[in-house]
Image (cartoon, rainbow over all chains, first blue to last red; front, side):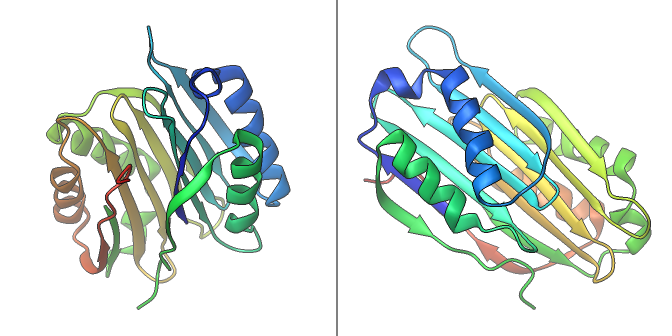
Length: 108
Length: 108
């Protein structure tokens, strides 16, 4: 699931500590297991980019504070529930999903 | 760009060292800058899962050797060229792209 969340406060989109914590909470809510985490705050007025590598694939976020955007990808297999992770982040960040794409992977 | 590559040899899809090297080469070919890398080899007959966190977003791969599948995501902004990274991996892994989805992010 690929979701663009709009209308989020710039201060939230620059807060790498908060975003990393929310991403871990979202993964836990989706019943995914985190293998590794990397989060980076760009300098100045820049945003945050980060990813959780999961046993069930990955959960990523990239933010553009200057336009109020967070782009979230939830790639999950097995029992993990991508839609739960996305909804967790939407609620926690306070964003409005204007673009939402679901792609079924590994469909032959 | 989300691409499922099929028909790849199982031994290749389990070779975490080779896959990590190819991902770095693909990112360099796409003119993306790597901020962090994490690659994981699942035990037994399992595959590889890995991600490069980029200044331009991310490049990820998840493999399923039992069916010959590698699922590649190239999320890139700015001058980086996602299609170059995908084509690099397709050529290096020897896979056939059967599903290819391009999603424009941050389109209002």
